[in-house]
Image (cartoon, rainbow, N blue to C red; front, side, top):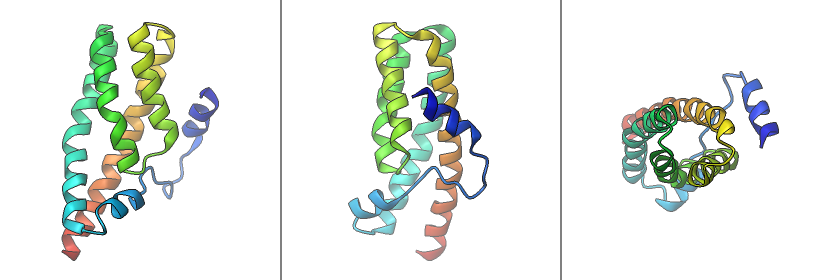
Length: 134
């Protein structure tokens, strides 16, 4: 996993996208209203979960950290965010549950914060495109 994290850090291209709405498009049968609803839910729920991850890590509140990571996991598939990030969230969940490898948690939380922030920006753009065409 550390190799994947290092590769993620080196990506600086503006053309790189963290989201891929193919799965959401398939699940909603290309229903743009439903896709907009799902995107809106992600945009409403993810920033507070990221805040909870960071605060829980700072407070060493492993139960809350585990819960926040658990709540994030389904959204990675739905919004087409890479499997590496889902794996990272699962590791946060597992490490906080077992209270092992706690030294790795800050980097994982930092990476998820960056990825989810970028994904939110991308999803806002997609949402606005849907609004213009609906």
